[in-house]
Length: 160
Image 1 (cartoon, rainbow, N blue to C red):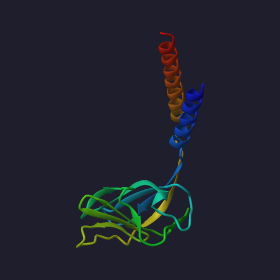
Image 2 (cartoon, rainbow, N blue to C red):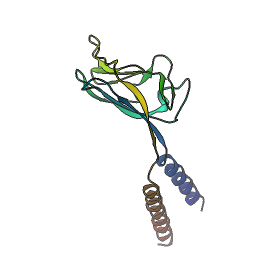
Image 3 (cartoon, helix red, strand yellow):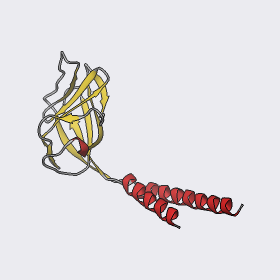
Protein backbone atom coordinates (compact mmCIF):
# COMPACT_ATOMS: atom_id res chain seq x y z
CA UNK A 1 0.00 0.00 0.00
CA UNK A 2 2.92 2.36 0.63
CA UNK A 3 3.98 2.57 -3.05
CA UNK A 4 0.39 3.43 -4.01
CA UNK A 5 0.34 6.27 -1.46
CA UNK A 6 3.67 7.56 -2.79
CA UNK A 7 2.37 7.50 -6.36
CA UNK A 8 -0.79 9.33 -5.24
CA UNK A 9 1.35 12.01 -3.58
CA UNK A 10 3.41 12.45 -6.76
CA UNK A 11 0.19 12.69 -8.80
CA UNK A 12 -1.17 15.38 -6.50
CA UNK A 13 2.10 17.35 -6.77
CA UNK A 14 2.19 17.05 -10.57
CA UNK A 15 -1.44 18.12 -10.91
CA UNK A 16 -0.88 21.18 -8.72
CA UNK A 17 2.27 22.10 -10.70
CA UNK A 18 0.33 21.67 -13.95
CA UNK A 19 -2.38 24.01 -12.69
CA UNK A 20 0.00 26.90 -11.94
CA UNK A 21 -1.29 30.38 -12.71
CA UNK A 22 0.97 32.70 -14.69
CA UNK A 23 0.80 36.47 -15.09
CA UNK A 24 1.37 37.86 -18.57
CA UNK A 25 3.14 41.09 -19.47
CA UNK A 26 3.23 42.22 -23.13
CA UNK A 27 5.40 44.72 -25.00
CA UNK A 28 2.91 47.14 -26.63
CA UNK A 29 2.93 50.44 -28.49
CA UNK A 30 6.43 50.05 -29.83
CA UNK A 31 7.93 50.37 -33.27
CA UNK A 32 6.98 47.82 -35.96
CA UNK A 33 8.91 44.56 -35.65
CA UNK A 34 9.37 44.75 -31.87
CA UNK A 35 7.43 42.38 -29.65
CA UNK A 36 7.70 40.70 -26.31
CA UNK A 37 5.74 38.61 -23.86
CA UNK A 38 6.80 37.51 -20.38
CA UNK A 39 5.01 35.12 -18.03
CA UNK A 40 5.72 35.62 -14.33
CA UNK A 41 4.74 33.73 -11.20
CA UNK A 42 3.06 36.64 -9.37
CA UNK A 43 1.04 39.71 -10.35
CA UNK A 44 3.46 41.96 -8.44
CA UNK A 45 6.80 41.54 -6.71
CA UNK A 46 9.85 43.45 -5.54
CA UNK A 47 13.35 42.01 -5.72
CA UNK A 48 12.34 39.23 -8.10
CA UNK A 49 14.76 36.86 -9.81
CA UNK A 50 14.87 34.84 -13.03
CA UNK A 51 13.17 32.02 -11.08
CA UNK A 52 10.01 34.19 -11.17
CA UNK A 53 10.00 34.16 -15.00
CA UNK A 54 8.01 31.15 -16.21
CA UNK A 55 8.55 31.81 -19.92
CA UNK A 56 8.24 34.31 -22.72
CA UNK A 57 10.08 35.83 -25.67
CA UNK A 58 11.44 39.03 -27.16
CA UNK A 59 11.58 39.91 -30.84
CA UNK A 60 13.30 42.65 -32.80
CA UNK A 61 13.84 43.39 -36.51
CA UNK A 62 17.59 42.84 -36.31
CA UNK A 63 17.76 39.74 -34.12
CA UNK A 64 14.43 38.03 -34.73
CA UNK A 65 12.62 35.89 -32.18
CA UNK A 66 14.28 34.66 -28.98
CA UNK A 67 12.33 32.43 -26.59
CA UNK A 68 13.11 32.79 -22.88
CA UNK A 69 15.85 30.37 -21.86
CA UNK A 70 15.79 29.71 -18.10
CA UNK A 71 19.11 27.83 -18.27
CA UNK A 72 21.07 30.87 -19.43
CA UNK A 73 18.90 33.60 -17.89
CA UNK A 74 20.24 36.23 -15.53
CA UNK A 75 18.94 39.46 -14.12
CA UNK A 76 21.54 42.17 -13.85
CA UNK A 77 19.79 44.58 -11.57
CA UNK A 78 16.44 44.73 -9.86
CA UNK A 79 13.38 42.89 -11.13
CA UNK A 80 10.33 44.69 -9.74
CA UNK A 81 6.81 44.82 -11.15
CA UNK A 82 3.18 45.58 -10.34
CA UNK A 83 -0.05 45.04 -12.27
CA UNK A 84 0.53 48.42 -13.94
CA UNK A 85 3.82 47.23 -15.47
CA UNK A 86 7.50 46.89 -14.70
CA UNK A 87 9.23 49.24 -12.34
CA UNK A 88 12.61 47.61 -13.02
CA UNK A 89 13.26 44.92 -15.60
CA UNK A 90 16.74 43.82 -16.58
CA UNK A 91 16.68 40.29 -17.98
CA UNK A 92 19.17 38.62 -20.25
CA UNK A 93 19.34 35.14 -21.78
CA UNK A 94 21.16 33.40 -24.58
CA UNK A 95 19.90 31.19 -27.39
CA UNK A 96 22.98 30.32 -29.39
CA UNK A 97 25.04 33.29 -30.60
CA UNK A 98 22.35 35.87 -29.81
CA UNK A 99 22.07 37.41 -26.37
CA UNK A 100 18.45 38.49 -25.85
CA UNK A 101 17.56 41.25 -23.44
CA UNK A 102 14.34 42.60 -21.99
CA UNK A 103 14.45 45.94 -20.17
CA UNK A 104 11.83 48.15 -18.51
CA UNK A 105 11.87 50.67 -21.32
CA UNK A 106 12.80 48.62 -24.40
CA UNK A 107 13.14 45.17 -25.88
CA UNK A 108 15.85 43.86 -28.17
CA UNK A 109 18.87 41.68 -28.57
CA UNK A 110 22.57 41.92 -29.08
CA UNK A 111 25.29 39.84 -30.70
CA UNK A 112 27.97 41.48 -28.54
CA UNK A 113 28.53 44.28 -31.05
CA UNK A 114 25.20 45.86 -31.96
CA UNK A 115 22.25 46.54 -29.74
CA UNK A 116 18.73 46.79 -31.13
CA UNK A 117 16.26 48.87 -29.10
CA UNK A 118 12.75 50.25 -29.06
CA UNK A 119 12.06 52.87 -26.41
CA UNK A 120 8.64 53.86 -27.73
CA UNK A 121 6.68 50.93 -26.26
CA UNK A 122 6.13 49.66 -22.76
CA UNK A 123 5.52 46.43 -20.86
CA UNK A 124 1.91 46.20 -19.67
CA UNK A 125 0.10 43.67 -17.53
CA UNK A 126 -2.13 41.60 -19.83
CA UNK A 127 -3.77 39.47 -17.14
CA UNK A 128 -3.61 36.15 -15.37
CA UNK A 129 -3.54 32.89 -17.26
CA UNK A 130 -5.36 30.30 -15.19
CA UNK A 131 -5.19 26.75 -16.57
CA UNK A 132 -8.48 25.38 -17.86
CA UNK A 133 -10.17 23.42 -15.06
CA UNK A 134 -11.36 20.83 -17.59
CA UNK A 135 -7.81 20.15 -18.77
CA UNK A 136 -6.53 19.88 -15.21
CA UNK A 137 -9.37 17.51 -14.31
CA UNK A 138 -8.78 15.40 -17.43
CA UNK A 139 -5.06 15.19 -16.63
CA UNK A 140 -5.89 14.07 -13.09
CA UNK A 141 -8.32 11.39 -14.29
CA UNK A 142 -5.85 10.00 -16.83
CA UNK A 143 -3.08 9.91 -14.24
CA UNK A 144 -5.36 8.24 -11.68
CA UNK A 145 -6.41 5.57 -14.20
CA UNK A 146 -2.75 4.98 -14.97
CA UNK A 147 -2.06 4.48 -11.26
CA UNK A 148 -4.91 1.97 -11.00
CA UNK A 149 -3.63 0.05 -14.03
CA UNK A 150 -0.12 -0.01 -12.54
CA UNK A 151 -1.48 -1.27 -9.22
CA UNK A 152 -3.56 -3.96 -10.94
CA UNK A 153 -0.55 -5.09 -13.00
CA UNK A 154 1.55 -5.38 -9.83
CA UNK A 155 -1.17 -7.41 -8.11
CA UNK A 156 -1.45 -9.80 -11.09
CA UNK A 157 2.34 -10.23 -11.21
CA UNK A 158 2.49 -11.07 -7.49
CA UNK A 159 -0.15 -13.79 -7.77
CA UNK A 160 1.38 -15.35 -10.89
